[in-house]
Image 1 (cartoon, rainbow, N blue to C red):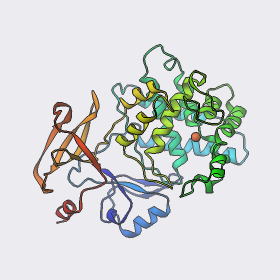
Image 2: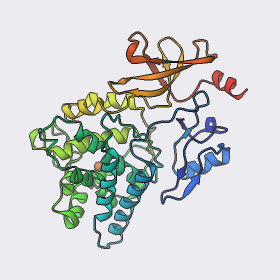
Image 3: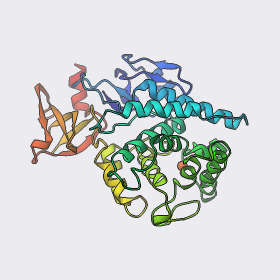
Image 4: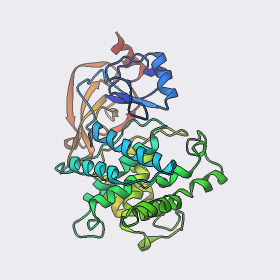
Length: 368
Ligand SMILES: [Fe+2]
């Protein structure tokens, strides 16, 4: 399956994944054929894209870095925690700790893990899903740093816990600003910039002994001092906040937002590389970009041969060169006999472009 934009083009496609609303109730089941009214309904629920079955490679599914069950439990825990804070109730962080433990259990033993976290987030559920993704990403980034450096000395549960709660200060920012479909005015951005300090103050009250208040305060600081709220830079920035900053930027740019479409993983990697050393810690960006899938399984790519292919599997030694299955010839005819190419062994064959979907010519042949 592969991600497509929820537009008229999605009508008639077969849904590749169960879709849930913000409190975990099922909206649509995998296997259902999308109708125009389903598409409209999903739009009103804040979805911008969905996974559909890839008709030319129905067996290919993106690998899940963590299971849907763990993801949903973690999203529920952070939602619950946030609602209690908004209601002024006392909170404990046991459920957050349990969620982090489950995530760590699932990550453990996946030695050559190549990260793939393009999950569908509805706009409404963005904040909570984002927290879970930033937690997973942060733990894997930390795990990929060399032994005995300042990063690898961090405590996993504490890092995961702080990463999960890094944006808790957004609870004090008006929803109209957080979900605004256009770019923010200067004044609105000044309000958004209060969330690190707000998060720090909230967390200091409940979990002052952990890394969480510091991560909340510093996750928008930049290594060149251009960040907020304090504009501190370089060595003053603690290792945990540096890790969470990389995870935060990656997940933000690969997610659909009210004001822009998500970027594909390879584009997001380019963004990270372009700000390595100025905004983000350059070593961490390097470790990260060697662990994250540049091309998601199931995505449709155009090769420099003119053929269209589906990404079938990652290559553990090269995140930039996956195994692909050629399904459409350069004349846009569906291949009678698709064949697979390990790009790592074929330096002359490259991915030129990641497509949002098959071109209309190919879709016509699929429909016939
Ligand atoms: Fe933030």
